[in-house]
Image (cartoon, rainbow over all chains, first blue to last red; front, top):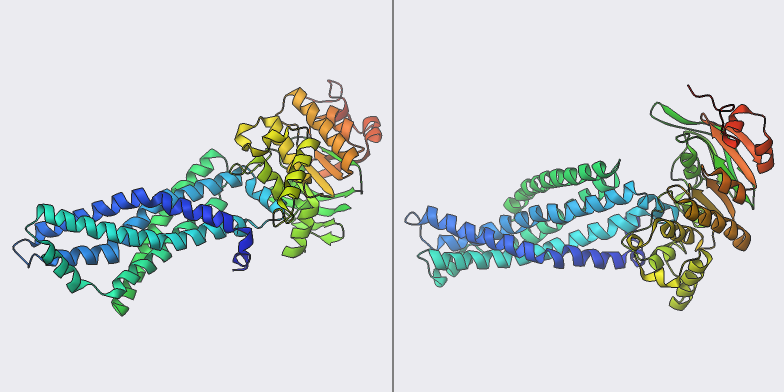
Length: 230
Length: 249
């Protein structure tokens, strides 16, 4: 907390990290979200046709994307793109004594390296989740229209039947928690790196594995939140 | 003034320093010799609190480093420049930004022009063209990186400079240039320096005092002349490595 108290010292890094984590992640997030939405509508259509009213596909796509696929798929993709990058970057800085050099010039590595990354992840992941929600629902809608016997009116009816505000907020809350978790693990494991190139490689693997497990863990814990307030 | 008093440090079962005491007087340059792996780098990292001693005390300008709070430690670190063995430049920053990091904790508190002038002055003192200011460390040779690391270490008008094997890994010409640079900085800005090195020839050029770390303890501490004339067989091995002085199993 003390390390966050002097934003003048890290705001430039914060902006750079927000750009890297946010803007540069857009293409991969859009691609994965679109595929997730399209696959969800296809799977629902395959299983529901003839069994339940076709408009239910709209409900399923919106519910799945907002509460689960949007935040979770975005986070899992970013464990690799952001978490692994942070782990490798900080791990390399440790083994090449750059972190010691920071301390040597009187700087706090937590303030300089950890705070901007964790803050950037916490702020940018929710925005990426919102983007993934829009793209996922759009792709699910389009996929349904192109391949299933459903009209736009039916899809929208199904979507509206399910939709409630908290589902949107829930995805955003999940995004913030996942963002903080991924970046914190990347920083923590990276700063604990030892050895040379092998150590950095080990760091990257640890970040991806533990980041994935942590995201899944939070997903399960936060599901209780949806049940309580949703 | 820097004083290490009864410093002991072990990593697991590996005892690196055992009751080491060393006095570094104000002004001048102390060369710290010793075989590879005897803990010379570990010793000087204690001075800025990068490593904490298991026992003993390290005092810099009256501040006990192991007992210093964050603020005191930060203040001491701003008075002590450290040149890392591998230069340890921040590869995501330009040469100019690297040097600015050494100026003060908030980077450049002064006007932009003043900062640029200080960067240019630091580059001049280490014999580098001002044009390199906008380059990244990866674009520099090993010798140039070492010089930038030295510039970063004294950019904030530090009173002490600690050099961790500044000539290791450099060709003889670049090693000579770095040694001349250390000597030149000593004359021009008058800092107190500790140079960890294996390079006796260049060390004798820049140092006025010598300490020899051997088998976890300080074996010798004194002037360069005393070191050269010492009758201690261990010291003789370093001063004049030959078949008579070195016993090879």
